[in-house]
Image 1: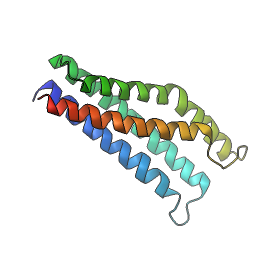
Image 2 (image 1 turned 120 degrees about the horizontal axis):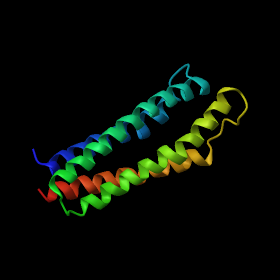
Image 3 (image 1 turned 180 degrees about the horizontal axis):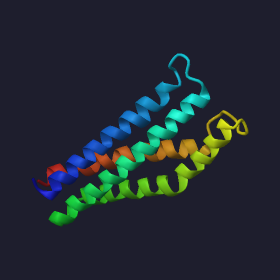
Image 4 (image 1 turned 180 degrees about the vertical axis):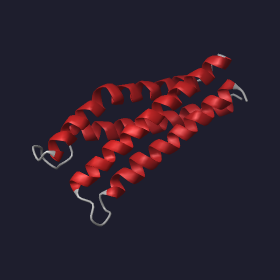
Length: 142
């Protein structure tokens, strides 16, 4: 299997994980019977921590796959943008969300969604677009 095919496959797995967790699991868990805000936040912290680790691993696989072939496909730029978005989420947005959820869990913070939450959701949406475009462009270059 070529490096481009590996990168495209990793990008599509990454896409599926982000779509399933961010746009299905996250909003639905708070609708489940018996789920309190505190319990939902605790679950979310664990799930998104695991998702972010998996995303980082997949980002490395994408990068290594692209380096193997040295492709010049426009898909590389889209996938690079997804990696940059992930880095910003991990280094800036997620720490703010963790601090806020910690305050809510100790009873100090408001229960409404913060601006950091909406920023994270916006980044997820843009990241999905980048992953779709990048993977499709890579697949088209094979």
